[in-house]
Image (tube, rainbow, N blue to C red; front, side):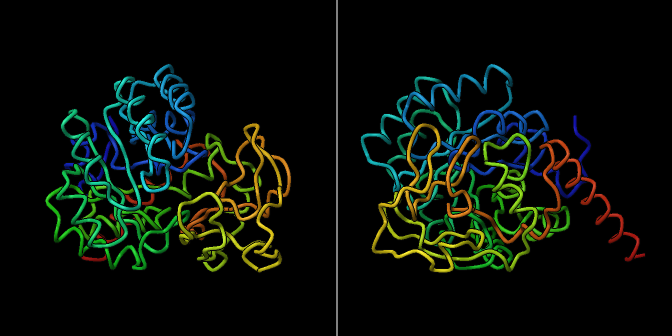
Amino acid sequence: MVMLPKPLRTPLLHTLGCELPIMLAGMGGVSRHQLAAAVNQAGGFGVLGMVREPVERIRQEVEALRAINDGPFAVNLIPAATERRLLMDQVATCLALQVDAFVFFWDVDTGLVQYLKQEGKQVIYQVGNQRDADLAQSAGADVLIVQGHEAGGHVRGTTATLSLLPQVVANSDVPVVASGGIASGGAMLATFSMGAQGVSLGSAFLATHEANAHSHHKQRIVDARADDTVYTTRFSRNWHEPAPVRVLSNAVTRGDYDEADPDTCIGEQDGQPIYLFSTDSPLTGAQGKLDDMALFCGQSCSQINAITSVQQRIDTLLDEVHIRIAALYRDSR
């Protein structure tokens, strides 16, 4: 059993069935079974990022995860960004595989939440504003993830984590998890002091050996500062709407490409072409103009100084939490 300081021993641990109140963000393409298993094995809660993936890949990833790890996990899907027939096939596949938990994001799909609750499944909903938090909770969500404006990838809301978090906590009857701007023990402890029962980490886990991200993407995160990230709608080719994302600055965000020519192929991965302005980030094995792809990254990059293993990342987070707590106790005497 992992020894946790008292502020981190929250009811979320019982809800999710894990030892640490640390969740893996369901990053599409990046959060595959190797990363989810590593987070599980370190005591956290693994999440497979399966947005828009074919059902065969979901089956392969779930089976591969279970083959090397028996910890609790969820599958992350995004209903609004997925063609409805594919979405229902994804859900049916997960149910056939006896997946126990789901993480959803973007528009709240009330009917889907209610259906999965009737099936006895756990539903975790990531939200970016109070309205979505209220809708998800009313639909029956078991856990809310509050995503702040600092987060990398697709960003739902416009409010900073430490501003939105206490508001949602005050209006929630279920555990609330914080996401956005968190990659250090100090940032993690700050969210717990405001009522979070856990954290969901994206950039911190993307910059690990086990992440299915290209090494170029990982190194760019390590080299970046918070003000190197850009909030933009330029990466929206295969999304259902021109939604904002937070990425690292590159030729696309600088406007070096003509938006009138979106069918330019700039690379390939997983046997598929990557087009200009696509939301596809460069994964392991990707080839082409890697730096011109969507290099998702949150403002927490300023807290990330090296590519490490997942275990090392979590150990460092917990060490920093202990140091901060000890300093606060010492200063209060």
